[in-house]
Length: 306
Length: 313
Image 1 (tube, rainbow over the protein chains, first blue to last red):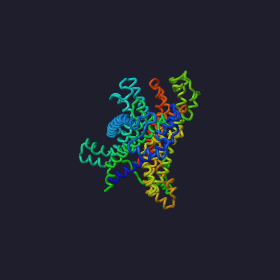
Image 2 (image 1 turned 90 degrees about the vertical axis):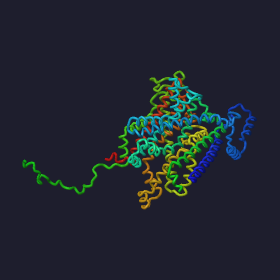
Image 3 (image 1 turned 180 degrees about the vertical axis):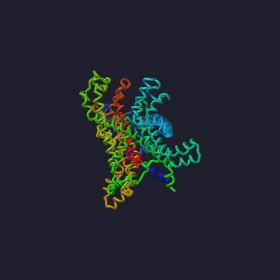
Image 4 (image 1 turned 45 degrees about the horizontal axis):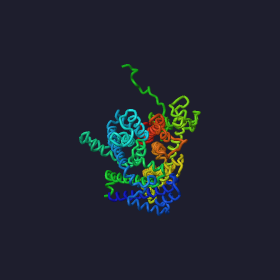
């Protein structure tokens, strides 16, 4: 187990390094100039270039950037003068994280429930109901779900506020819109995984031993069927994260996704670089945690050490 | 008891034995693909999905020519109209004909969806096939590289690549999406090759002196074709979705050209007043994804050798 964790850790660190380097190179290659749009005299422009260190050779910039990163400094935003990427992240990340966590919790709890219930009612009405929900959820992009919910429940029925992030009532529509896709994926995975487990010999054994239905479902079926869910947790996190780009735009939520998209449109190099690195590190860390959890739950990895 | 009821030997004659045709198989034998097709045809839902996809492809080719309206022509006098005799799908906020734009968008979205998926699978087959078949050090190096690349969020890389290329046409979008897109397929193909390469028919081919290239191309790939096709069908919606996402956040196809994602972006800007304009592209994106998912499910069942025997002929 220790070796496994160490191996995953090295791969994660390597991934982060490759990511930082690639993003650094790509951002330097981007056409367009961050200081060109504003009314700038050549002198101010020169001073700005000097101030941000763009006049130095690339390797000096690269190592300076790496050094800053190691100290947790993601650089200054070029657009919002004198605001560091760290400050922007400090304000916007908690909001995005709040939105994301709510969506993940809703999707996981409801998805597992629907998946299990669908498998237990295999071939009956409730099963078809869950399958239809899952297929619709997979087929509808988040921006469509976001707009439709906003229109129907916000604008027409006046049940929830149409935008902003203030009270619990404000969170309902964005969270539902963001979780729909993940909910569908989890329902689908859990259902097929449960259906596979139900036909295993050890379930028959458990029945023959005389265990109650409830005990068989909770102790044998769900526990074994939940493994594939752990493997898709990584992609799910990534999906929720990119989903926030769109949902935050639709509901005017001041989270990271909005700043990222506006950074792209403003050609705000440092902002794109800083935010991409932050996203990347976050996702790599999430994948690392998922790998470790998987190592603990999958007996094949646990035992291979001995 | 009447004598006519008694069965006697004279009542029977030998018809004759046709030794030559004794073992003749009278019914035509079915290949794997014919067999799969028969089972797929029985799956009504999957066939409906297939029909919708084919319909959309045909409309993407001929749709824009069916109306006299040009997809670029703006006319503020007829902006934001609902469907009418002149404009079958209505007009957008610049008065452009939405019928022409929707099918033009279908062209772009479907092209990107199919091209990205096929290229990803192609690269994945080459890299995964080599890695899995030859194994050893080469496999280890490739797998470590894949491990590292796998953690990098693909949509973020796609965004950066499009920004670096500076223009966002179809080509940019396709390149951006295959840069990290092949990884999943390479992993899948490698796993399949590892499973297949130790089976007897591969050994037999080796003993008969087949080259590695021949074994990979003629024996391994045809044997995983069923799963590959299912994978491709399931991956196309993902590519279409990515294109829609990139266009929606503003770095995809640029006007006056359009795609379903771009149409949704334009629709979203006026959607409080004219919900029809976002409903239209959303409907086509969703039904395409739905159809491909249903078809993929059907294909998985039809092509799975374990499901064979349920329709033996």
